[in-house]
Structure formats: C-alpha cells, structure tokens
Length: 457
Image 1: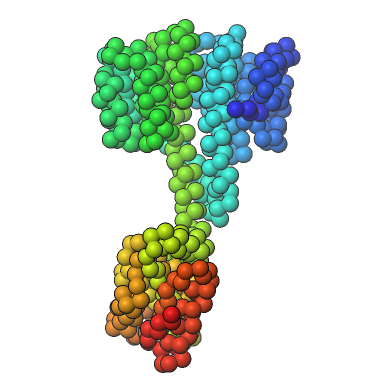
Image 2: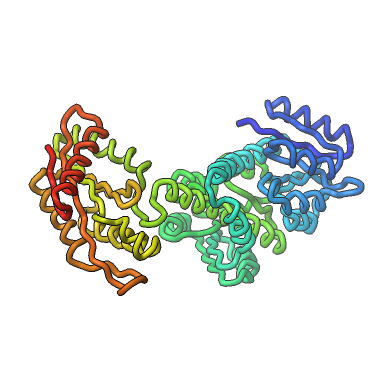
C-alpha cells in the first residue's frame, strides 16, 4: 500500500532523513519547511498523511495541526506529530489539536511504517466514502451536519477488556465523565467477544497483557468478524513493548496507549477514535441516503425506472433459471390530467402517493413495483401465471375504484379509477418487448372505456 506523505520540518537534515526512509519503502514524499507552507501544500495536493514536526519557528506543529483540522478541505488528512518531547501532556496537547498520533525522535523505523500503513488504510476507506458522497446532490447541505455529529462524543458506548482491576478502574473513572456514556468492563476475552457481537460499541479498549488470553489474538479475532471489522480498537501496551505495538497495528488496531496510563491522554485518544467513527458512520449513512435517492422516486417512495431496469433483469434471469412464469403489469390513473387542471398539482401529488400505497399493499414483498413517470406504474410479479395475475390486477383496480382519495382541495375526497395492461414473459424476448406488450394492453383498456384489466399474450 503506497501513499503520498507530506514531511514538515524546519530542519533540512530531518527532512532529508525521513524522505530517504519513506522513499526506500516506495512512498511518494512531498516536503515543507514551515507550517504555513505545509497548509498551502495540503490545500493544493492530494496528501494522504502528514508527518509534522512540533518544534518549528513562527508557527509550531500544534498550531499548524489545529489549522489543518479546522479546514473542511484538509481536516480528513491524518496528522502524525513528530517530536523530541516525550511528556504525556505534550501528546495530549497534540491530540487536542487534532493530531492522529505521535512519533518520538529518534523515530523507530518499524513504528513509522506500521503507523503510516495503518493511517493510510483508514484514509483510503474514508476517501472512498467522501468521493461517493460528492456525487450525491445533498452533500453540501449535509456536510455541516456530519461535522457536528463528528464533534459529539456524548452517549458513547465503550467496552474495556482488561483483568488489571486497578488499571481498569482508573480508565473507567476517566471515561465515565463522558456525558450519557455506557462503559462496560470485562476481564474474560471469550465473554468480551460475545458482548461485542451482541452490542453496538463505539470503541473497545483491550489490554495486550491479559492473563487468560492473548489480547492481540482477540484483536485478530475481532477483525475476522464481519460485524466488528470496522469497530475502533485501542490497545494497552507496556512501555517499550514495540513488538506488541507493531503487531497490533498490523492487525488493524486503530490506536494504542502505553502503560502506565495517563488519564488526560486516555480521554484525548478515546475522543479522537469516537469522533472518527461517528464521522465515518455519518458518511456511510449519507452515502446510503444518496444511493436510495438515486433508485427511488422522491414523491412516492417507490423504485424508479433506473432501479426497475436492473431489478427486472434479475427477475427475468431467475424466471429463466427456475422455469417459472413471470408477469408484468402496467397501470395508469384514468383522467389524471383533470385532477391537476381542476384541483392543482398538490392534489395530484396526494393521489399519486395514495395510489402508490395501494399498489404496494396489494402485492407480495417479492414483487416489484416502480413509478415510471407521471401517473404510470409498472409491476413485475415472479412465479405468477396469467390467471393469478388477472386476479391480482382486478384486486388492484378495485382498490383504486372503491375507496375515494383524500385530497386537501375541493370536497376533500375524489373518486378515481385505473386501467391495467397485463402480459407474461416469453422465452427469448427482451424486457422492452414485454413492456410494449403490456403497454398495448393498457392502451386497449383505455380505448374500451377505462377502469379495466386487459391481458395481452
């Protein structure tokens, strides 16, 4: 996995050293000698990760990080602070500024590449979601909502898996300050796995020093489960246990804390992981909404022509495989134009919504109903012969005719009827041929007086 890494340091030897290390591992490297230059580059180039030195003149790394994370254009880029400072309060300050992690000088090569790999993996996933949503028509209007969601950690659900009671109590006391949070603790890894599968946690904290099990093996097991694959994991590792740390990052762990635990750092790292998860969840939700919008009719909530074209082909293929009949119905509301002309388009929309509801209630979950446009609807009924299809079509026709439609104009109620054309799928024909035949039946129903069902074989 390659990535474009921006190295930021005011000292040229440091820049050259990191550039050489990264280039040897086939990473593309861009360099900057100041915070201002780094911000300018990040706004102009597709940077994947930023390695940011803390001690720089004019604008230090903390301030640079704050500005990067405050900008919607660069906030998604992972930032790793590179510093000679090893005090916990310095790490906390960086995390509060929005940094995703720290590397302490002299930099351990293994830790460097493992961290870059982990952060690059995460960014690729988030970038894919962000790119998909840029095609969604509501991205701009939803971006502020997503940002607000990502800043909120209240109501977080966290599981601590640790058999060190003193350490667990210390972490628990800190996390309990999160508003409306639910903090669960378990010492048994098997029970913890069951708990994770049963609940929906925002974060799981796992000790690598469990007495009854291998904490890293538990992490591996978690990542093998479909439901838990994207669950944020934070491991607790002993100081100088680089091997466990690197292995954890390779397994897909999101972050780590070095024991003994410093309370403020716990809060900073937990907040970062929960915010990132909520940002990711919000993007996924927005993507799903945009996808749904692309295949559904916004007025009626039924599937649109685009979805029909794809799903109807699947139903035809299934009919061919199973050698079972398949019917297609086209229905059109009789004299619908007069509704819009007399009562207005609001009344017309009200009737379209109610017709859609009646169509849906008269077919099976396995059937397909779609709005083709205007007042025309199409239904596909798998495993249904013409006799059954006629019965269903008659039931639909009667459901439209017998119950007046509620509208906000006029007397508040309006009677309408519908005409329906019915046909069956014939082996070897195209879907368009079936549509034309059903449309012919609809035309005949209209020509013969409307409010009828006509079968065309």
